[in-house]
Image (cartoon, rainbow, N blue to C red; front, side, top):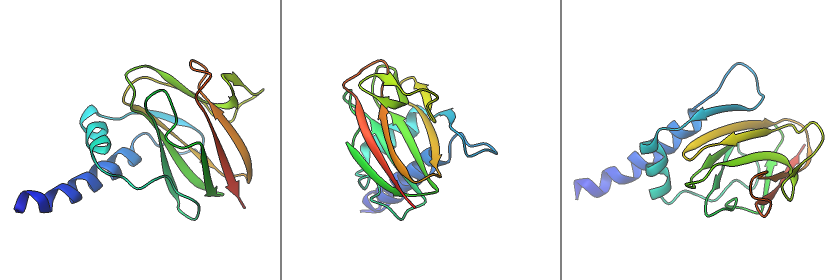
Length: 144
């Protein structure tokens, strides 16, 4: 009985620790490696789906050679964390169908169990793709 009471707080702590990784003084993209135990705990927990707006942070998992959501709507100023839960490397790149836009606002390569985050400050619609796997695509809508 005591064991079941500890599972939810431990899973929640693992998600918080995963979201806190990386960081820096600038709101630009910053890559950080998430410990395998944190990634495993996060994967095992039943996390809420990505935000539909109004939160200060959201998480997108790259798993099964796909982003875990095709469309994410967030408020301007929201930090989005991307976690590669696959066994293969992926990129998180502004673009579509495996092709980056000129001067992408985010272009990070993630090895397995690695994470990166980016704060979307400007309202607009951002297409995100994996340069290594062109079928991996998603849309982030940032509302002002």
